[in-house]
Length: 286
Image: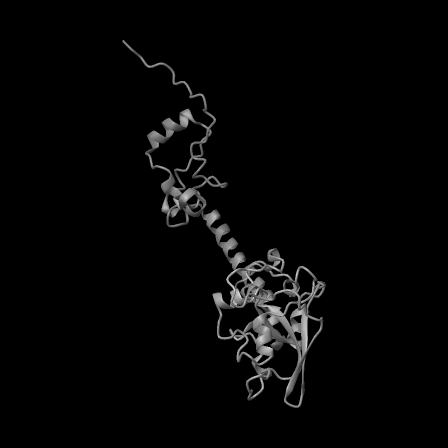
């Protein structure tokens, strides 16, 4: 007659076979916490006899026989303590996101900052446009203005709307030529200020505008530029392109805060070959 001998434990008898589906409370882990979100589906149901035979071989395994019942607190038998913790974490994350959004958008309570944020594609302060303009005259009223790279304005508006990484303080460093570190006035801005173009962007917003100008700029009033700069209180910007418009009779004079460079090319009008006088590492996407 043959009789079975004693059951020998496997070499790795200290393994917990339920480690992937057991939570820290010794119950069934939440579906959202398992690989692929399978929850209880990540394991296989078995009767008590099968489980106790398996538990004899792996005594360190967590017993989940009571946790898989729907009456344990959740619809799928997941750990009720983990469910409560997940719910608390979700509510706290929502409150934290709301606080961050409120703090991020607080500067929009300033009318000057909001004017820049809500500015449409024209790129100029419409409240500073003169009523009627003739060809050859600047459309802007006399005053002091800032020229700010359009790419910075886009990054800042995206940050204010959706969050993410806060852009650096507004700066006009990308408007400097590499050779002399003097400002280069974008062709589209000069054409607009001199009255050769009825709009700042010349009616072109895409490839043409970017090809004809190494950097595309928007125009801010003196008050708008100061309000934006105040949002970075402890940051010193290295350069700001400012200009003043004054009228004498029918003529408009443009005075730049720093004399522009006239030796370097500010764009590629009618030329398909890119002449790089600017630091392209700073000016990409402009």
